[in-house]
Image (tube, rainbow, N blue to C red; front, side):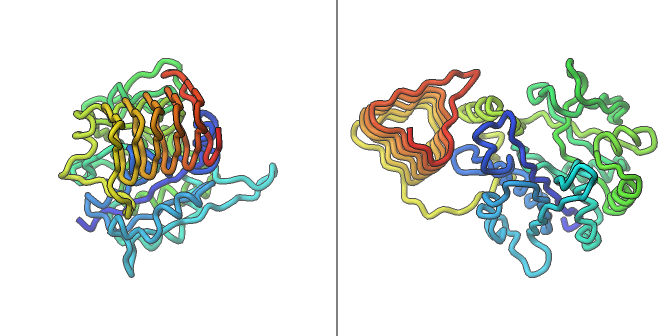
Length: 369
């Protein structure tokens, strides 16, 4: 299918992401032992036949650039089209120079790039959405129903209080709601499909009226004049908006049923290639109900945890209910519980660090504890 073009928004999100969001955008947060969040929307698009993807950058995007490279690992390294990184822009306003205020302003900033799109349809996606969506089927449904914009919605388990919600009747969206204290309706996954022609019209109209908010100035303002249709996705979906959400969704991967749903062979999730050796588990090493990536050395005990590549757990150390990013070193007789350790963290011998399931302890990148 050559009729779909992908645009991914890579936002800088701090706040509730705490230390995880200080050095990287939410799209480049590691997830699931070997992936970054952006691997999922990229793979969804490639699996649907998209050969052209633009990523709109925002802030703290060096980690994302290092991860994606030329796009070769996602079959997007091409002489024409392929993966395009679209740098952030600033707009001069009375209050100073600020990054873009919303999707429509970001799209207006890459207006010249939009003119180069040859495909008939565009999929707009957030870079921190972890899901394995059947975008090919969603596009077919979009064309079949004659929708102007198809909105992909999640089930109740995905709902969080800061999202966009849609009331749906017979497949058509009748109300667009956000900033709700009591969520109702379907939670939007921030995935939209529309024609390239309509996208250009909306961008030009919003730019001409200094409107910048996609959900308010497009979805809500034009819900009665545009045919907005909902596509409901009942499978696993997660977004990286807070440390607790990141931790909870990571722990869900220990469920084999969820792993089988997220990593289905029909729609493979691609990731950056590594040249690591196999993981070594020593004679006294113990691994129970955990995901262990390549290149690790486990001489201690790891239970109910997710361990990225290159991690060392020395003898006598116990790691439970934790997430260890790439290159973490856990020295002798350390006890970790409910901890998220960023890249290259070293926990010195005989330390005990304990968080809680409702408030995991986060260790900043390259820190020595």
